[in-house]
Amino acid sequence: MSDINALLEPGMIVRHPDRPDWGEGQVQSNIGGKITVMFRDAGKVVIDGSHVELVPVF
Image 1 (spheres, one colour):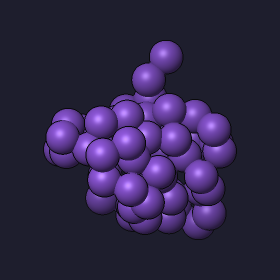
Image 2 (cartoon, helix red, strand yellow):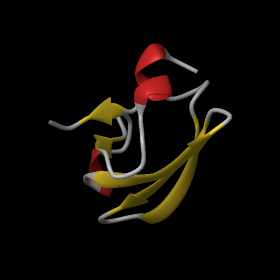
Image 3 (cartoon, one colour):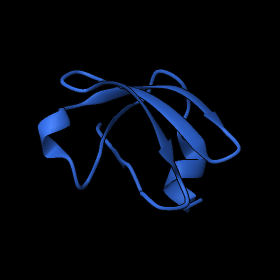
């Protein structure tokens, strides 16, 4: 898991770098490198943090 993904906590807003069409998403959980995100335009997605570095939105 990347350093950024390790810092993600529930409630944080993120974007998927390869899927801009999903819009912004809210982190639901981050357990063992599996990050569950509820995306505005894609719904609930479980992401393997070792393969994708999510982009926090501030």
